Image: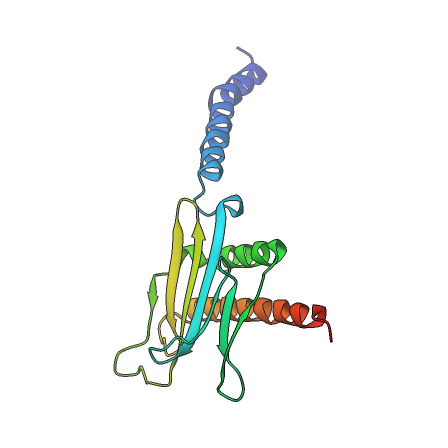
Length: 171
């Protein structure tokens, strides 16, 4: 066999099967991904100080309650659009939400009664992911930053949706 023929044979017997296997393997991973937006059902978001998570939003029921600046509990309906939910799903993916531990809490001796706590849950048809986050968490700073940015993103989406709702109301 000539040198060129040997190279072609090597490529055909090693590289081509490897590429076919990679295509099959990653195709199956994408097909069976547990957190696909096409299977998205709802997001639940709660936050508050201490053990009371008075502020909460559920996209399935569209119930939104929060404490306003006068410490009055406001209950309202708030609809996030499909684009808003897709944006939150993608941001959760970008920040690695699916790899977060379920409990991200500070040490017991540091957790104060006034420490902010957050609960985030993304629900899909086949699976769901929930995370409890304590702002007093003093572990991995990258993890803490990722959760904080995700929380800011969710708050911004809720604020934007609320602003849209208020501008649509007749005077």
